[in-house]
Amino acid sequence: MTRLIPILLLIALAALPFAGPAIPGGVYITRLAVIGLLYIASATAWDLVGGLTGQVSFGHSAFFGIGAYMTAWLVGTGWPMPLTLLPGALLAAAYGALWGWPCLRLRGPFFAIATIGVGEATRLIALLAEGVTGGATGLTLSIGGWEHTAYYLALGLVVVAFALSWLVRRSSLGLGLSCIREDVEAATSIGIKVGWLQVQALMLSAAVVAAAGGIYARYLYYVEPGDVFSFNRGIALILMATIGGLNSKWGPAIGAVIFLGLEQGLAAWFPQGHLGIYGLLLIGVMLYEPNGVVAFGRKLRGVASAAAR
Amino acid sequence: MTDSATLASVVIFGVLLGGVYAAMAYGLGLIYGVMRIVNLAHGAVLMLAAYAAYALNTRFGLDPLVASIVIVPISYGIGMLLYSVLVRRVVHGPPMASLLLLFGVGLVGRNIAYLIWTGDDRSIALSYNLTTVDLGVPVPVTKLVIFGFALAGTAALYAFLHWTHTGRAMRAVARDPVAAELAGLSADRISARAFGVGTALAAFAGVLLSMLYVINPEFGSALQLKTFCIIVLGGMDSIGGILAGALTLGLAETAAGVYGGTAWQDLVSFILLVGILVTRPGGLPSFFRR
Image 1 (spheres, chains in turn orange, purple):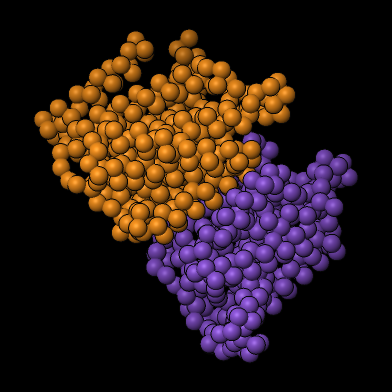
Image 2 (spheres, one colour):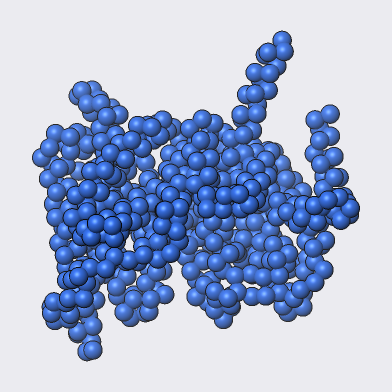
């Protein structure tokens, strides 16, 4: 039965744009769902580096921004939109390899600090390169009729992200990455190519996040560095994955849904408080359940089954 | 301006900036040295202390330097409290736990600033702000005074770490926590004090910075990155290392600003940070080694 849940969920999500106009608030829900799906795909992809490899990256906003801009430019030159995602993903993967190769030699906090630097430097460069990115005013895309396509592309990207995460975790790449997470020296000593494996994880993760950026750009008809390259995009991914549960199959996705709900709720009822609430959540998760909601749920289930017995 | 005059001003302003940057970095270095924790709430402490100086200035007309007499001890208390309520529980866990926990603390701090002071830019007006002294090039008195206080802070920290029992205990724990415990020191208690002192140092720097820059809730984020850059640059063997790293960054930024334009000024610290981290992958060497 539990195996059917993902399939049923997928069918329900695929039907949503058709059912949307019929149910009250459906259009709003559909719009929200696009963002939610992009969050789910990005968080799942981020977890390949942040969870599976154990290298927390604050710099994934760079990939999101690259994907968004690639789509904006190529759509401007007349490319069909779905095809623009591929060059964006490739460019982001190449960018990831470029800084990942040297930076991934660093461990833990030092890698995290380096990615803060990379993310912020990328944003600043994008802001300065006005001729290419439109500077602070950004670029506007042609308007019209992309909502459905964007929705199904986002849904497709979620499937791709899950498949990727599943395949990586089952492959020797995933095993190698787990080994690197647990003990780098031991991994090196048994002949695991520590550098190359981590770069692969970062490239895959970058490609998915960039595709999410591209869909986001087409969906919003507008890109600007302050939005798509913003530091907060990188932080959001960290929050989603840690709240949901690092290095788990469903954790990042569950975290993404929780984050989306929080974001919407806070925007409506307590817009001045979103940073603080995220901060408190992060503190709470780190103090009480470093493995996130997924681990908490597992514990609850354990308690429930023990009580039933 | 002639070339030599330009160079002179780059050196003077670079050194002055470096002095403040050094004061800004000691707190992060001390906490890392004793606990091996990267304090991602550092920027928020800088920012909140700057706001505290602003508030005391507008409400009571206190000079920020006078206000620091109040702000620094309170920050020490807040640091101790943060350690004993939160940090203590993750200090022996995986490094990411403390990193993300303190990042959460930083977010809460930024939010507090937004709630109290909104996102608007604030600045402190000082009577001596416009006075300058001629050192070949006109130099604002404010910058000289701040530089003096930064150096005084450096001297005080040196004295504390070398000539007081607590300071020496901190160095002992930094060098070898197990040996320190065997010698009868409580690493936990020393860590709490080190977190307090680190927070107080950051607050002191925040007060100095409030006199130089416009204050807003995002004020700490860029400075935190610069702090990392200094810590990484300096090689962190000692206070001298931090001082050297801070002077390097101060000079590099000033030179980039004068010769390349303000855009470059912001990029310098990022380029240095990533460049040094990558070419010296040992990361932050210990604050106190040797």
